[in-house]
Length: 223
Image (cartoon, rainbow, N blue to C red; front, side):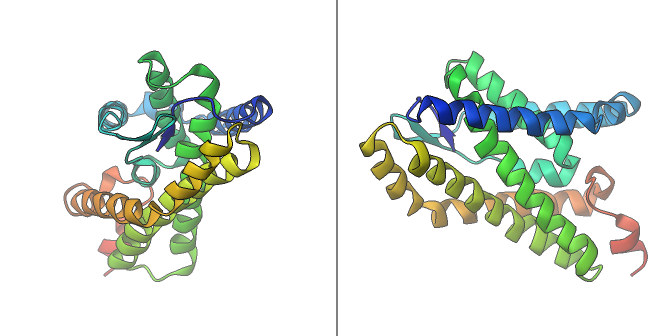
């Protein structure tokens, strides 16, 4: 989901922009480009995934004039490439949306926060929980991370958008529409979870080495 028109107070737009800039800067400080430069196959996979997600973002429903609904795929990118590269992908996709005229420049920080920072953070927390606390079981990883984690990340992104509207909506009608949208979150969560889980299942069967958060030695070789 993406906010397409400036219905938030200017101070909140600036605040979201600063938070997004800080988090993306933190991701860049992890030097994710080093792995890309060292692995040409990873370059191709990351670029292909970024372009594919950007194209899939074009399949969207215009809920109201200022809000468009679409699958984010942030959880999938986070599992496959880890959070730093996933955030770079989502940031690049949001910039592409601006250049295509889908959203305004002033909303770039808000959309990076809602579609990138929040779901990637939630997905990262779920993955860390599975990695450190739960048994080394392939189905545990698949269902908790891919299915449950992506659904939870979608819920967090939607609630973040609604929370921003409640905090600084410049129009009372927009706030009412945002609250109405919150009622449809349970319908969006299964869709994101199903597609993420299905794609992760395919990757874990045929190319487990492509999934950066998955240790095939722990989950497969030792069984």
